[in-house]
Image (tube, rainbow, N blue to C red; front, side, top):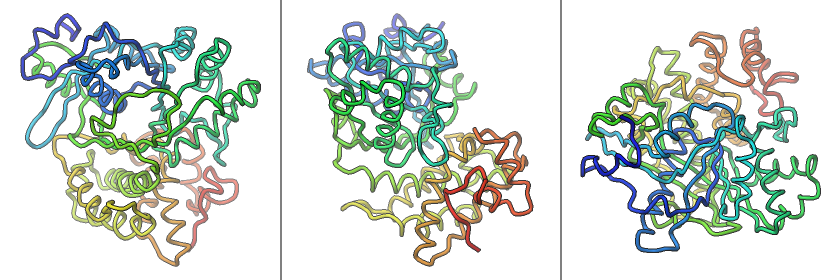
Length: 448
């Protein structure tokens, strides 16, 4: 039997579950890219915020309609379960399980495009959020919108058509909330949306600018790909119920959000999120320290023959490299906000990486390196070069990335895979990758 609303009452008493009446809630959020991370992070926070509404009506009506742009896989997992799924927090102490009820349904954009547009245009919708990965923003090498990539199956099309319907109906604007690992993601999303609108719906530009906002965010939670073993463990904890949509994660979670919303929002700050005026210091620390060390462990760990993050960080040489990147190379490039202790942050990250209960695959982190490395490594490199400092840990990471691009860890999963692989196999791979005409040209200039 599958997990379902009807099965909730029969679950073991120790398992946390929604406290609100799901059927009585309206959809307030449309989310593009409803993968494992969203389910373990933003939907998890939203579920907790709606649990507050068991006694406060103003915490209600934040159900989520998820949108999968192409693959029907998540819809096939979640819709038969009424949108329910479990979040399994894994630590050395064991597993803590919670049923999340915030997702109403999942639409597959390629199969039901009109329903997606209608969801964005619905009067109850106040937030359109995104976890589409870095490559989902369809950016060219210079950061501008690549119109060839931003075609009719991109989120730009569906959001634009939904906003157009809202404007014609006299409805208010929405908050567009990027939850992807992009530096200054709100400003980038706003710029890219305006570029798309200027070409395809120029009459909507002023309405968008006056009625919609794009706050920046910083997200942090390690969410490995769910395995069959994970599903079996969750099913055992659920008394034999199969949960095809379960996600496994760590106990730690962080969400920093610029408090700049166009419309109502859930009380995320009451359940652990941080609403701030300036996201940049948190975002920069996360990108350059956590994500930078993650990519270093991924490429260096794969080269050393490891499969998982906790295996790589247990290697004394890789642990030293990760610490060097965070403390000596990344931290000096960050201006922390008051109370932000970067040294303690590095200690906490090492401890999180070492969690033996999270089988976070290095090959998963190694995906889409061309989209991640600029903000994770190259900004740190450029800052240090300007100060006359070297970055031996990041240089070692670049060497391991080139080794990866040469195919030593299997097929390269990257939107620029063919170009990157050809450049990596040249006599001078750094220059071929980053020099004039290279696939990463203009992003960083190698020195020495």
